[in-house]
Image 1 (cartoon, one colour):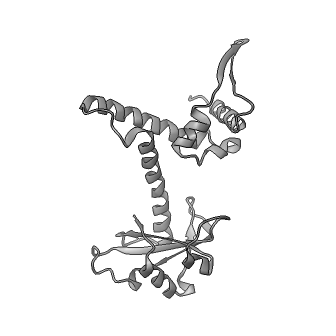
Image 2 (cartoon, helix red, strand yellow):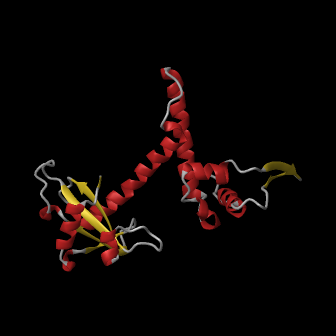
Length: 210
């Protein structure tokens, strides 16, 4: 799980020798350019924490315009820490596993923004159906992001649920039929019209199951 970068963590980072930092890994197991990991466990007093807890920190070069703390502006690195009780495995693997888990947390957050955060009734059955619908919506949204919000539609991929509803799901459009074909007519003035067209093109390009 994530761990706050407090003053004690910053002091421990300052004590890490340059040769201790090792390259981070990406999701495919390759070297993550501009990222390194190191363990801080031996540099911290963790006596009040559960036995076996380890603190691992990742540093990476920030993207242009990123907000950095005064500590990070000093050396130009952005730091993120997490804790684990896993005793085996290379640091780079443990960090990559943790980073992948962050996607799960994103899905939960998106589901909360799509109805999971508030049930509509005191009746169990009504809430059960509500939860089922929220899960279906979250599943469809996740698959749409993976399969359709790519290429020319990539500008929609990073949208939070509220922005995605406004830009894509609630777009003012008309579905018409002509010459045995369906046409989706989107106002040319809509800022994300080209991205929406690309979404439907990506979906249409998905091969039919055998």
